[in-house]
Picture 1 (cartoon, rainbow, N blue to C red):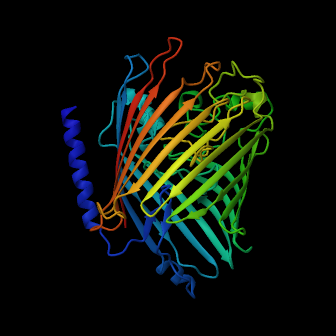
Picture 2: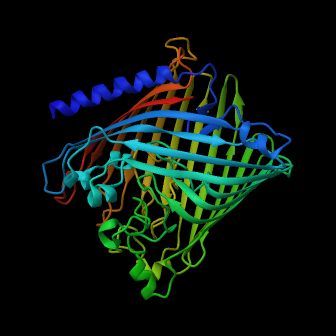
Picture 3: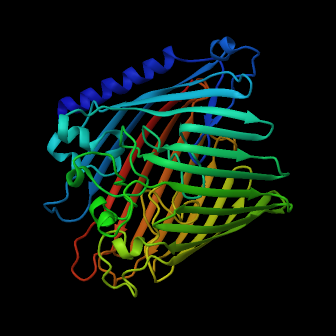
Length: 486
C-alpha cells in the first residue's frame, strides 16, 4: 500500500507538470455548474472544402479523479473499503464550417495508476467509472479508452442536425461528465431556434455508451458482464434489472431498442422558463414531463420557484420486469405495472455571491421511475451526491447553500456548497433502502494564474438508518478532481 501512495503522488505531480506544459493564453472552453462543457471559441465558416479541415480547432483536457469510499458499519463479506484513481483526459477536434457542414470527434482515455486488486474491481463504488470492470475481469487491463464522440453536423439558419456519436442534454439524458469519460449516444439530433424565444430538440438515439464502457450498447436492455459475457447492455445503477435480453425475448419484446426524445424550452412569458419533454422507448416505456421556473427580482436577490412533473406510462415493460427496478416488486400495489408519476418542487434564492435552495420531491406509491440515461428525474431538485431517490413512495427534503468566495472578494476563484437531504423510503418495500440523511460538501477552486485549471473536492457523509435489524450501510464518499481545459 505504501508504494501505491508514492505512485499516486508521483502521478499527480506529473499531471501538474503536464498542465504547465500545455498552458494556453486563452480558455477555449469552460465547465458550467452542471459539469457540461461550454465552447468559448469555435471554428468559423470557410469558403472551401480543404479549409474546412485546415482551419478546424483542437481542444485538450488533462484530468485526474481520485475516490475513496469508507464503509462505516460493521464489516460484512460483501463490503470492503475501496478506492480508485483515474488519470487521463481527452482531445476534441472540430472542423470549420463549409456549406453548412462540419465534423466533430472526441477521444477519451483513463488510466488507473492506483487501483485495487483485479478480484476487488466489483467492490469499487463511486470510482467505478474510471475503468471498465469487464475489461479488468477479462483481460486485467485497467485502462479505459473510447472514441465517444464522432459526428457530422449540418446547420441551416437556426436549425442544426447532428448524426453519429454525440452528447445530448435533455431532462432525462445527460453527458453527466463528472468522472473521466462522459455518457454519450449514437443517433440523430435535430435542434432548432427558428421560433422566437423557443428551442426545440428532437432526438432518435439508437445506442448508448455509459461512462465505464468503451463500446456502445442497447439503450435500455439490462445486463452486466457476468450475465451476458460482454459489456454491450445497460448496467447503469438506475437501470431496470429485470429488462434482460432473455426476459424481453420471452415476452416478445425487442432487445435492440431506440430512445425517442422531443423537448421544447420556451421563454415567451417574461421571467418564465417552460420545458415540455417527451422521452420514450416506444415498445416499453414513455415519459411526459412538464417543468416551469419563474424568476422574481427582490432587491439584490432573485427568487426562482420551480416545479417538475413526470408522468411515466407503461408500454409493456411492467409485464416483463415488474414495478421495482431493483428486481423484486414485493410491497408494490400493482407489481406488474410501471405506471407512476413524480412531483418535484424547489425555490432558489440567488444573489451575486450566494444561493439558497429548498427542495422537495415525491414519487407516487405505484412504481419506480426508469431512467438509465444519466439525466436524473430528481436532478436539480432533491438529488444529492450519488443518491437515487426516485423509487415508489419516496419523499425527499433538501436544503442547500452555495457561496462564491471569489465574487465576495475573500478568496479568488473559490466557491463552496453545503447540502443536506433527507430521503424517506417506504419500509414496506424491502428491496428499497432505509431512511437516509445525506450531508454533502463541495469545494471548487479555479486557478487565476492558469486559465482552465480547477480543483474540485467533494465529500458526502451518508447516514442510513438500519431498521428491522438490517445491516448498517452508512458510508463516507470522498472525491478529489484536478481538471485542466486548454
